Image (cartoon, rainbow, N blue to C red; front, side, top):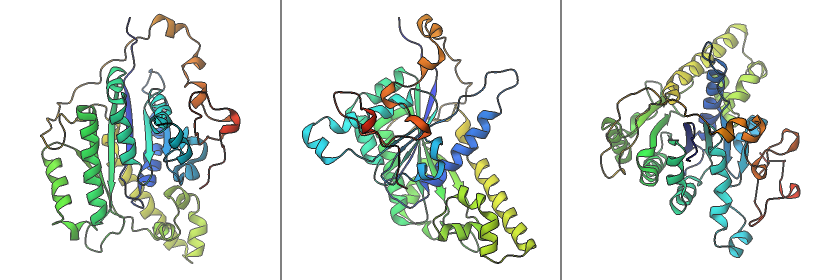
Length: 350
């Protein structure tokens, strides 16, 4: 008898270039998803929380969201591990796939992690097992007004489709990090070949596009200058207003601009909460066919053995479970055996 697997959406946020706002997109998406999950359909089952995964040496997402991160992993195993075991790299990433099986998830890929994670998928059975377990991927490539960023986003989208084929929905997120007085910061790049190619993908139905506009609030400008997250800016808005020597009217005005921008961003992310998003039907070199919108397939019933199991048994295996005390481990597995508690480090450097 074949096990039935409920449909799951695995959202990957990446691009090999750093400093383009991937962590900002992640935190905003998580907050929007949490708000959506709390609004359970009337008379329906409550929605499960989003599983949050991070693969990043700097652990930026953990530094911002702490215990909201379920699993945090360095970008690669230690060189000593790789030198001892030719399968070290693929086994190092294998726990990530186990987390993708838990439920809808978001995986934040740090700088220069996008290529290794897709290489891992290509060298393992991830694409086939994801189809068997009804895991659909959504790859969000983030780009800012910068030639190298646009090139990296295009290459990342092509890599995602080449790896996962029709089981991935490519999404391009234009993060207008700089802005212009009279329009978008992307305006000077209209003749950029990578931007033109990305535009062709969108017109042909090969990918979705989401625009994050520039935030004109002084509160956010202060935060950018000090490398603060949007969440930090929101929580410290009174302190920031005092630092900027804003009077009551100016403070209220700048807060209003920040709130309006956050609402605009969340509305822009709305397509990511639709399960029937179009899928790619071929690698980027060929054309995709956009699938017609359809209702999400019903969740299949669980086998008898699974229905009788207590709820806690549905959680991930012990060797990838969160560390004790609410801290989330940066796991570096000892290959061939389950990692011991002494191998897990709960303190994650910011």
